[in-house]
Image (cartoon, rainbow, N blue to C red; front, side):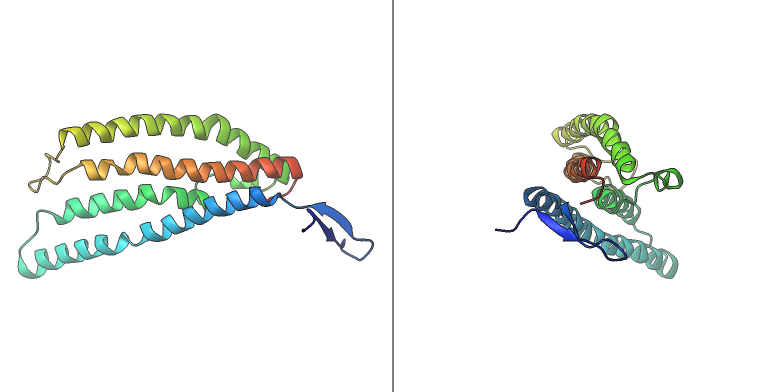
Length: 193
């Protein structure tokens, strides 16, 4: 059985110090949630391919054959929206969302963790609950009515596109739990797991 302490030798030599390692169960949960975000990000990234194909098809059809489509704009718009929304959890995992790094990076690890923990608990999760609640209603009403776009001659169904809203909320919730666990650990231990 492995011991939860790890020996570290200080810079410049000297006696090794014992430093506690994160509990295995915590690391396993964080790793599982982060891996899920990585994998969904990879899958979602492939949505760029059909979007580019639709746009190239439209350009070629329109400018080389004078035969524009009625569907390419809608498809590219919906795919881009889906790509953007479903990629949000991956961006959260990669720490790619906007933050005031010029202030944040100057903080100690504990202060960074404190800011992150407070932000997740008091802003991120409450906002996400509202997003999920209204997003689900928005999707459910669209699905129940079998809503179609009325602004396009193609009139594509909108309910599959609107399903992206609650799915995005669920993905962000999952990754938010991982980020909060990392922040709480860093707040307590003074280092990131």
